[in-house]
Image (cartoon, rainbow over all chains, first blue to last red; front, side, top):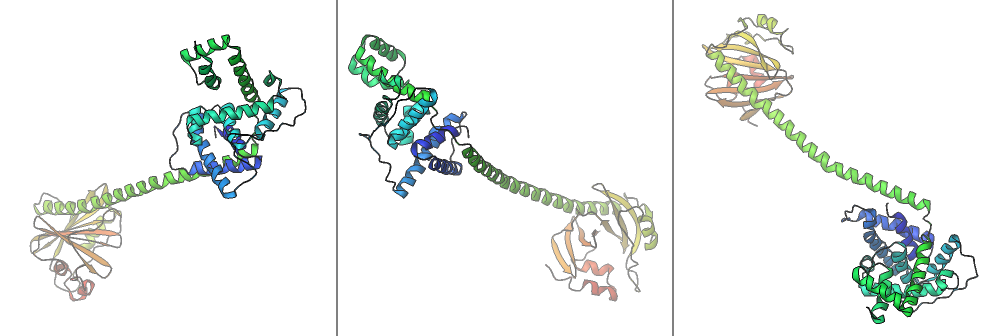
Length: 161
Length: 269
């Protein structure tokens, strides 16, 4: 339960809707509790790579089952559109803008942004969760951030400079 | 100093704290000198700072905690139960072993105790508390002293007496009072030990059943020991009479009326 918030945020990065994230969260806990081998860790944060991996597997299996079509996995190109109006940039607004921008990213970029920039997982941990080489993590993260920069630039003064 | 071609791929690594030591120092030195790399760094830094500054962007719903807590609590309960199962099984095995030891200790000790009492009596090193050939007199003396009801029968009924009561003594076996009865037949002693302890079970090498009773016959250093349980009392009879198995019973209970009690006793279990 120590990493519940992190896990929920990762679930939100994978699922477009909060209710989907909650379902994924519950299924992940169910799988984690049923796992025969559980990591023995001193800090709740240390369990995150393990339980994030479970969550991703659960999510991937569900995706294959449902064959969702509304999310398109894009590696090299992003359909990025930013129809924003001008806001003053309070923290509340910053949160709103960033959330809107992150939510508009393809899931494969969204999850890596959440893992790296929000949950502070290392490249190695992300690579383990995604089951891909370190180089893929770096290139995918770079593309995700560039897409995010494009989205945030019109709305967040700090990003404009 | 690092060149731009070395710095550019490291910008993200630096932002993500994946560059350290002298490499980080070289990187920082290059940024102070190179405006183009600095601009690229600032762009990335600003984007990342905006994202990190906005975190958490997703509010965790309270109900998600409740749902998971319920799930975890249920799992923990199951785990505790699972942990109990081997513990309970181990405890059951341990109890069974203790019970087996307890019973076996009671068995073998009682037989040996009876045999030793008999030997002592045979050597006359074992004084009787009451010396009398009258069953009623001995019963009256024993009754207030033992924790069970005891009335000695006047065997054999109606026939010539083949054996005679010699007396009794109160003994202690494992902290409980037991009655030792001495009989004599053809100038040979016969001992009968009676206990009401539920811990003491009859046992022996061979067992024979007669009606509701099971008799166990064993030998020890020339002595024949018969043990049985009847109406909550455990008996051990010891003698050196030269008879085998069920014949022992017929010596004392050989009268016509009594033989019926031991019908089928010759049948070994």
